[in-house]
Image 1 (cartoon, one colour):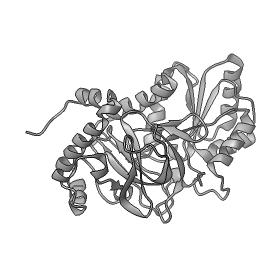
Image 2 (image 1 turned 180 degrees about the horizontal axis):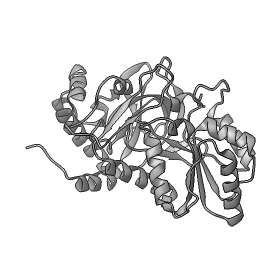
Image 3 (image 1 turned 135 degrees about the vertical axis):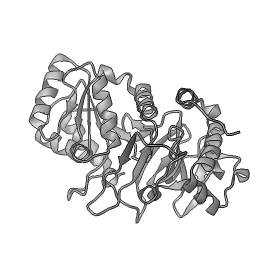
Image 4 (image 1 turned 90 degrees about the vertical axis):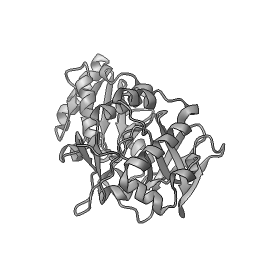
Length: 339
């Protein structure tokens, strides 16, 4: 008999996971998705990775992220509560993520944020996400809107192009010593910082990536250096997430990200998409390559994703982004050159 879980039980199993339990839980998730996700099963069968051949994380096939552009990737049959869609350039085909349970997504992004920053409700949340607000189906906008709803500060909100109002709000918050989170897409933060330099002593500035095809090309280090200079900050924080997943990793500075316990970043060879070089517990060596992600919260889509990002993997569950694979599809959140 197949195992059927309630949403509450799923959340307990996923978000209460320990490092020692992760591999067993990943293998159970693989078996569930092999049985209940017809396209993933087809892909695994093509890879000759049937249930009997999977005994460790290194055996699990990771689904190339590009399939989210052309296939409906869903585990079990369900009517989606939401469909999130990736950003993209004009004429490009966007990825779609069919969400069975929005509550599971909300628990994932709230618990991941709380582990690093505490309750989002304790911040004044100021969001500068113009390119995301101007389209439908952004998972990032959904996440930030829920944080704004939680916020105890009535001035929390989205600032589309009203940058002068945003500047005045930041001034007010600084004068009153209000704990603030300014979260924004990279190009919008750059333009805002260029026009409105000011000391920010009570504000976390968090960029979500994305130079969105701008003629000005900056590395992540150059962008962070500029923002630090304009706002007199020691560090710029970053959020790493994507439409195809339900979990995020955060960096509190220097471009080093920490994933939550139910999410792991693995490294595969750039010249062999099937060769997994390192995952947590497999090696004590820092390793560079392309990023594979295991997201156990992504139970009703696919939890094993081969991304187009490259990076450095550290044995203590941290990672750093380096850039994009050559000839990979470029989306809004990956158009900034990263170093």
